[in-house]
Length: 189
View 1: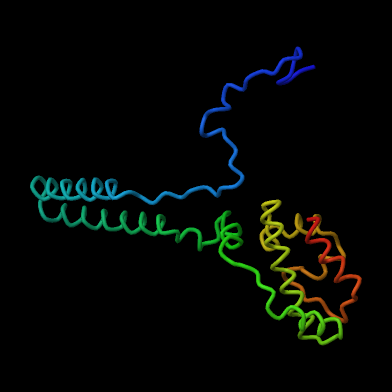
View 2: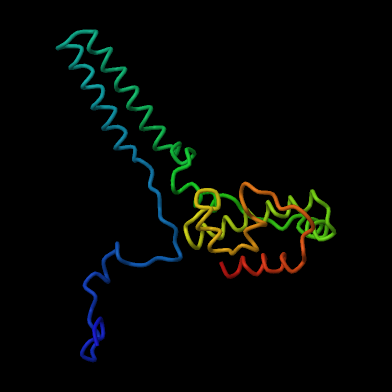
């Protein structure tokens, strides 16, 4: 027998009490903004550097330094404000799941219309199922329908994949058995 309970007695995990090793499933990671003190130190350092450049190297060097500091500040502010998240980074899908809430709204008439073979309701229902599957796959498996379609197709199966394929549109009548399997698949994926 190996592991924590070797020799019949429990072994203490030496990292168990450390804050970084505690599991916190009930909390999302906390994003802390840049503090005022940090901004004040950076601005003060830039001002002192600009003054020293102006005194030692002249106005041309001070102007070049000002341009350099401005560009660096704009890049830093863009990154800190989350502009990189809008550029489609790896965490974009997870942020989309956290920001958007699914509502039931007009699901009943859409489902009834799709089952009665109205083409526009079939397309609408497929797009809604696609969003739900994308959220579920991102939440449970960390993959997106749009960024990893092969992995998503392998997880949901070919029957459901024809309904939620990102670049395809399901054609024809929607069989009730397929709709039931798609709803059941949301629970199991």
